[in-house]
Length: 310
Picture 1 (cartoon, one colour):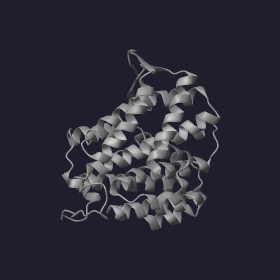
Picture 2: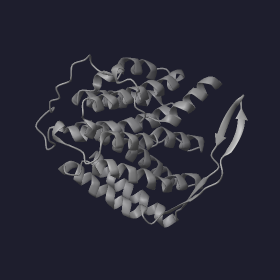
Picture 3: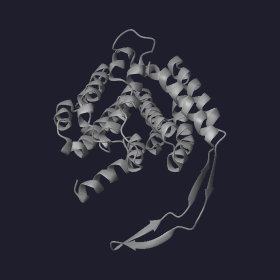
């Protein structure tokens, strides 16, 4: 890949899959409000009846603070960790997702899997995951924002893996943004939660087999992201399905509560880069995590993830 393409990819991954599309008009279906109907009679209630305990603005800000699973996958690859398809949610699990809530959560899971596949340039393996995301998206009326035909074409050529990442990530953003414009934030929250859990699960399984200092510390810092995930999940805790998820994530939080993260403030440095003045943050955060704590996190993440995808 050319240097400019590498830089473009790095910048895109840095911003992550959770950045909202600034102009919602880009993803709206004309000016008419969509009439949302449940895909079938299920345990979850009509989405528009669920009112969060916090504002949509707060939820959006929290979501934007959560790193993309692409960052974790990139870290694994950069550290020399090999690709392992066995870490992913099997594409055959698709038939298990028979409620809107399960659909939304596992769109997030499959999106994280797709990101992992794309980072490792396993474009042929991407086909079934592209198909699953498209089908699940159709179930909750956001599949029109997933450009399946273009992605399928890109997946047949390994030279197009950077474009595959860009377009699939952009499509995820569009689906997420459309849910927000239709006041279906609870489904967006589930998508983000599923993507986070799957990204951490993949990293945990790698750490279990081939632990290293950088990966262990990164998993320790996920304590912060888990806290943020719980804030937005708790906003809908009056719903039975969300209450169940909160209960499971709270068990994970209890384990993470034993991990200490310290922050050391250092005066920022100002320097000139390419003729422009840049402020460099010199402050440092340190995580203290033991091997026993890491083992406990790996085990609990696997348990919760298994519960959510089955």
